[in-house]
Image (cartoon, rainbow, N blue to C red; front, top):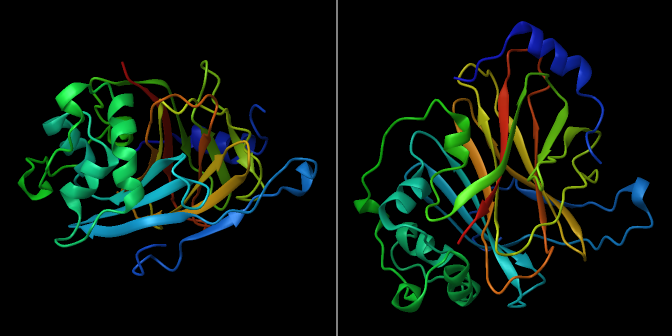
Length: 303
């Protein structure tokens, strides 16, 4: 359970109002949506409306897993994003613990329903991801993994950071940042940081420009929300991505009490400099009740 003092909650409610620096599985949750984020205050900024390209989505036990294309249409130049909502088991962390650095295609193969064929963009992305994860030679071959054989811990780690940013050996997370949110009904955000300067603050709308720093394509960008076990209501979960062509805010499935929501943009090689940024936006229920959540962001580096 995430712990908050009365003082810290009051400070969050009063002092966080200023901004800091700066489908296609048909079973997709109808509450998911994407907003074009052409901010009225940034009329001179090029911002092209973009719809999320959900390649495939399915559930595995209590894991809701989506594979999304961070690129233009079916162009092979892009990155894979992975969205998760899960409860007592962090399946992807268990997969990495058992098999090391795995690609989006291998994650798909581990958890997809029997008979489901991976999208061609997942297949095409495998080698680039494997190279970015430090794999070479025969290690570039696609692993055949069955997620039902994993040895998994049936408990939620008390440490939200460890839940959102699991072991990615031989890689490691850097520029880790987190913040606790106790105020109801306000939108708070946290960017994946660069050079130790995470952007954070509050915003008027989900489409407001967070101004997150763009990262190189060989880094893994991860953000997440842990909803406290004492929360009365789910926490709304949004992610904002930005590349040189557009800025998009996407509504993720809301995170119930005592559960975790996570979104990851996978790395790829060769390196595309300053290709994309990622930030998390969360909002506790507007109800005047005890709702709390923690936001976490990290940048993954691989040898």
